[in-house]
Image 1 (cartoon, rainbow, N blue to C red):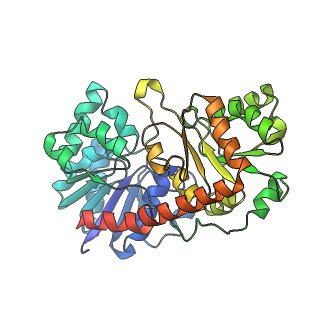
Image 2 (image 1 turned 135 degrees about the vertical axis):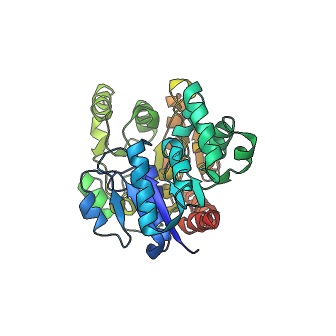
Image 3 (image 1 turned 45 degrees about the vertical axis):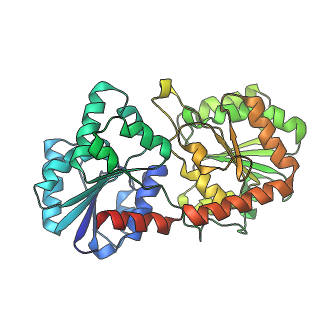
Length: 376
């Protein structure tokens, strides 16, 4: 790859989330001397930027929007650094900057799409803007087959034909079986042999932690010693804690504030099963696009229980690497979790199969290679 790549994104550390991790891992895999990132201002940014070996230009705003001012700033950064390629960390809405960048010497542009472009494809005004973005960039990527089907419906035939899969990858050397989860268990007050079910994600309605809690009394009837570890933060935390108390399971449920990305391998190592019964909300406007936590858990050797929402089921081979469940059926969620806790051998075989699948199909190196190919 020659020339420089400009990554324009709102989704970048120190913000945390699946998209942020995805964009950061792609940036880490590109040649640092050929990379420039233009992103928003956010608390803690100077400390993060000081650790990176490529330049990060922070806009004065906390959220980048394709305004004339931002367009001028992005165009100027591209000229100053000699960028001839660009990546939009989320195609909507930042892909609307493509036309102005094309006029400043950027000759190839890739727009990454995630889950929110699905709802862009379903409402009239945003659907038209998404169609324009698809026509203006050279390639729109998609993270799951589900997302491709939904997004392509809003695009021109030519733009839909140019879509290419680029899913989040996992660092399979960092997320792997055999790590020591003892410190995490000890801090949570779990005995070494206690069965632990882990749920790690943002605490928001779509992720389904409430349904996991509703399933938990049923799990405890079959596995009385089991513990549920809910890792994450978000607006639903107070409601979830109240629900655990109302269900009388607070003694077996431990809430842990969102762990840093560097800590997550040890968090997965502390668990026996990973479960997140994510669900689609708002009449189909808010699905789970894919879910990198499912892939990290599988890479760590855990069987995964995933809700049937959007592209999330694509991370699991049902009954082989885990289970796909109806996220609105607490009995089914409980049945699958209890089955895994009651049969450690089955859980171990599913975890090993999931690990092998991630190594073969979902590695971070594979994702970076795909992006470099798309950039030419």
